[in-house]
Image 1: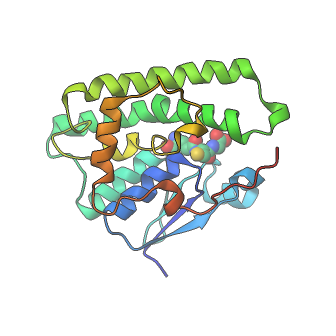
Image 2 (image 1 turned 90 degrees about the vertical axis):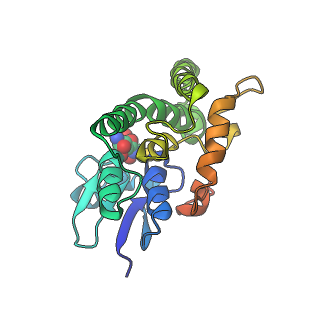
Image 3 (image 1 turned 30 degrees about the vertical axis):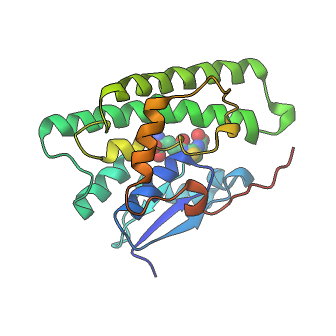
Length: 216
Ligand SMILES: N[C@@H](CCC(=O)N[C@@H](CS)C(=O)NCC(=O)O)C(=O)O
């Protein structure tokens, strides 16, 4: 049995942050597949694990469970002594970017992509999809500007803020329908640095459930 368990599924960028953190820390961990698209996260059994009805959920070696990816990154950072802050100013900077990615960067990309390709075709609404696309682009542009003159998001080295912001950015561009003009050179250079970290893996190689059987 592994030390850590992560309830997750391949298409989940919020889960990817934690799966990637576990991998980068060299943790002994295993994924527990959640059939999200089959409605498992809404089941009573899953809500007994996480009443918020969300993936991911992290189970620690002592059996404690945590919801919310930002909390998990903080817990793992302390557990392994990696990717954490060295000063109070860094702690606040990591917190600032983690709160922002959760509210905007990853939330908007995740919802936009869900509405665009995972929702059954007959339920898709072009106006809503267009709105979320704009919100996702706005957030991505904020990160692009921040990375213009720095290598890492919150410090002079990788921290959990980088792992948190990576959530939805490594999924294939065609899943978002980004055009050839919609490119972010600073983010792409930062992604290459993240990819060069020892232990990096693509979300679809790290978590179960890809490819998704398309129903529409
Ligand atoms: N703030 C949460 C977001 C998690 C989240 O939204 N997960 C999605 C799957 S990627 C989910 O379970 N959504 C269910 C819902 O919104 O009801 C975190 O960072 O862990």
